Every structure is written in C-alpha cells, then in structure tokens.
Image 1 (cartoon, rainbow, N blue to C red):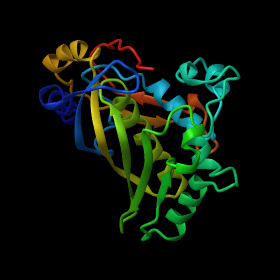
Image 2: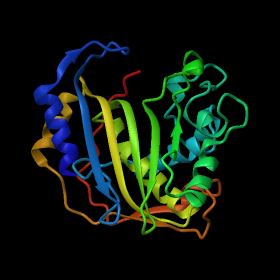
Image 3: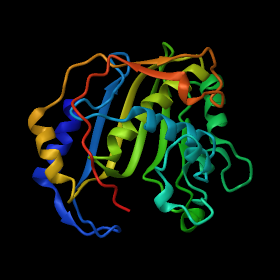
Image 4: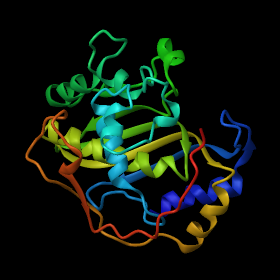
Length: 263
C-alpha cells in the first residue's frame, strides 16, 4: 500500500489550502491514479486499520438501492445518520441511481452484469450515480460517481472507479476496499475472474484536522501482509449476499487511527 502513502505524502507536500463546503478546510491536489492487482492481495490499507466490515456493509447497502438509513441502522451502522432528514431519508443517492435510475426501473447493475456476460468486448460496461437532474434532491452528491468494467480475452475482470472528490485519510481506504469487493462480486455474477482495481481521482484532499494524525502514519509506513477475501457462500446473485458472507484473512495493519468526519 505504498502508493496510498505516496498520495498522502504528495497531498501534504504539494496540496493547496482550500476552503470547502464543510468549513473545515483542506489541502488538495488534482489528479491521482492508484492501481491494485487483486490476484496478489485484497487491497486494504495497512499503515492504519481499515474497518473493512463497515466498508463492506455500506457497499451491500448501495447494492440494495438504499436511499434510507434504516437498513444500515438495523445492522449497527450510523455512517449516514448525519446527512439524513428527520425521516431517515437521503434522497436518490448512490444505490437509488444504480438500481432505479430516475425512478423508472432502470437497473444499471443488472444491465452491467448482463452486458459482461453477453457482450464482454463492449465498451459500455458502465454504472453512474451522477444524475444531473436529481443532484439537488440528494443529501450529498456522489463522490464515487461512476465505475467502468473491462473483460479481458482470457476471462479476467478489471474495474475502474472514478472519484470526483476523495477524502484521502478517511474515505479513500473505505472506497478501495468497497470497490475491490464489488469487483469480486461482479466477477462471480458474470463467471469471470477478478484481476485489477484502478482508482481515478479528481480532487484528492486531506482535511486540515486530519493532517497531524496522518504524519505518524507516514513515518511508520505500511506493513507487509497477505490479506485475502473469503466469501462464505456459494451464492453468485449480486442481490443474494449478507454481511456475514465475507471475511478477510491475513490482514495485519497498524492500529486504527480515529479521524473526525467532516459534515
């Protein structure tokens, strides 16, 4: 995970001070790319612990088409509580766009899996949450706004994640873990083998109140491990997974670093 730490170091070294929506302020750079070979290890940051169970839970919630915090709360997560209205609703955010675009029944996830199976050479293996007409109704506009898949001639699946905005200290390790999981799930659904996860970032930033906490993370550096995703079910249906179906073996990170969420 040296490339993750390289991005942290670059953001501290080159980042411009910026005002932002939350009022906290950031150091920001524009344009970064990360790439992970999923055949080597599951890409969890080791320089500080990533709470992968929480990250996976959020991805399963996206796949359910979630626009309410109810299911997350039932599973012990308050990740989105700060942005929900008094009824627990968030508007047509990520999962809603993925599974019911414009409220008219277009299920981008199922269409993607179908196209991976029936037209693997296609260049339209794309899911987007950036619905311009519904952005004002969303509690937050999507940061991880799209992902695109590629099927190799020998049956491997690559996924590229597009981030318009990336909270490098707190959000990015989560997103890496989530989309690595999603790559595995798409591969299972389409009878392919997961290969690479690529992450393309626009605005990469550290919140000003995270910089001090990340300096010792840089000093300590990454830890070598052999993190591996174990899926404890024969299910291959993208809608058939439960949080307890997943386990990570061989993950050996440095301790968790508590960081405040900018709301």
